[in-house]
Image: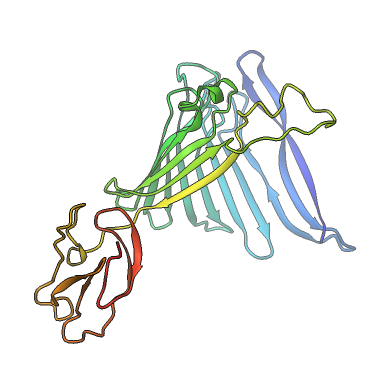
Length: 325
């Protein structure tokens, strides 16, 4: 199935700091059609602009969409300057998603706070969001904060996500390859993550992804057309991802399952008094720590759990339950 889109335009004035009042052609409408004998219209957008000759850019842009299934409207509220200019001109401050037709219901509102490298300038200098807030139709909201690296690359250092009660849900921290490898910075390869760490509300790391680059040996091929010989196999700083390792941090076992151990031969097993399934006397059988399951010694306990000493994890199925060394 093929589609065809037709556009309509308007001419609107705006303020330029050097030229004063000027005019610009803007898209005011779009209609999508099925390409068939009837050329049936499937959806229509009529864009309106809140604009006058004293503004640096539209103060608000409304984009309703009408189709046979449902109709909606998205309203963008933009930062603007009256008879002047500012670095944030044209950046979306608020985006509202509404139902159509009237009476309209606001389904979701998105608010964004911005910054840039030098906020004293009148022009843009790497603008980026510092916070985004999403409010639902029932008034509840979440928000996300962003911090950035201090090297001028604009890379996100940390993302902090908050829940409906303004509580921290998780933090994501990213380190970048060029920060510890100057050769990549010299070639402007500054957007390659070396590790991404996720922590929970308590600050405990629960997941980590590590990236390695340019580890594989390159091979040169002769008679390659249009190949720059300066970029042969000896140039290994290319930014090619060669491996990705994902680590998952698991919660430690409960107290009754911990065996107090060290590297010596003395190991103090565990019991859980009062629990008929956990009060059997443990014993060491070869290299396995086993314990009976109360009155039913044939009952087996199978779990995948990390070693309490943090050295390994294995699935242990033995007489009772066992940690395999």
